Length: 182
Image 1 (cartoon, rainbow, N blue to C red):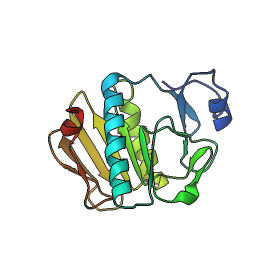
Image 2: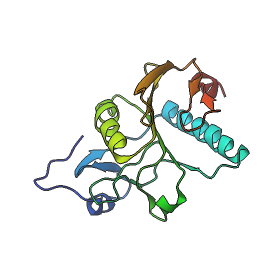
Image 3: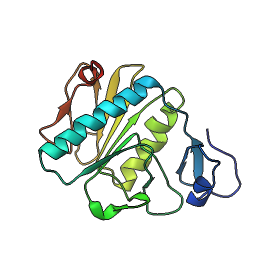
C-alpha cells in the first residue's frame, strides 16, 4: 500500500520508520512490505543456497544477498527496494549500506498483496534501471515469469516442474519443485 503525501518520500523517510517496520521506496512512493510466509521463506532459502553454491563452485565473482538487503536502484534518494534475492556481479556497487545501482539478477516471490507492485511497478523500474534478469516466482500459481532484459525475447513463463534456464549463467537452471522437496 502506498502512503499519501504531497511531496515525494526519500530514503531518509525509510530509515526513520519505526523499528521493525519494513517498506520500499519507488519513485518517491512508500510501499509497505508484509511479513513473508513459510513457503516464501523456503523458496528464498533454497534458491539462495543453490545460486550461492553455483557461484562458489565456478569461482564466480558475483555475490547473492537475501532480503532484507538495501538496493538503491538509481543511486538517488527516491528509490530503495529490498528484493527477495539480489545477485550483484559488480563489486564496485557494494558498500556497507547495500547495493548502489542495479543488481544483475533480481528474484521476487510474489504474494497476493505484492502482485501489482511485482508485476507492474517493479517490472518497469527494474527494466529501466539496468537489471539484467528479473524472476517473479508465484507460489499460488506454481509458475515463474522470467524477464531477460538483455535479449530480444522479453519474457518466458515456466511451471515449478520445469527446468528454468538462468539468463546470466548459461549453464545453470533451476527447478523450483525440486528445491521444495528438501
